Length: 219
Image (cartoon, rainbow, N blue to C red; front, side, top):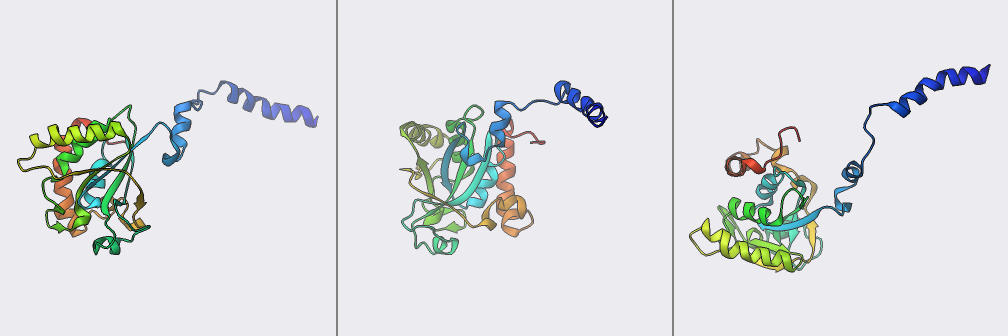
């Protein structure tokens, strides 16, 4: 009697499991569940274009970009702090590391956005932010990225800017993730004065210029 009662209880559940319309996990869904850093289907672009709060805010909104980290690259001191970088003691530039799906957005398209949303003609400066940590840099990981970066600097950027392009194109070495309070800064601090006065107009301009490349609002 115990076993028959057990089967009477379990049989409907077994049928539901076998014939449920709930979608089964696909390879793509399993990949999406993996930590971003471990996904082999993604590529990484490392760019410096002034204050990383500004650059991060822009690239976060691009369709095909899954993660953007603010940090430091191009220096000579291991594990630099924000204070050290601001004092220009480490040689680092404020940098963003962009994890993106090349099936959705290309490296070339990322470079087009990069040259459009910061001023690549001002050496060690973006607006009122002055210092070597605000220099414009493309950190390439392979020959293809180097070639695309050089082409974008030579052909695309001059069509946008009148003055000579001073963006550095250098091999990638090490990226150090910045302190937690720098991550997702614009979204978490929309009423901070720098965000309202500097970043918000930049993001609004970017959204109009690259409307077709933005993520859907429900993503």
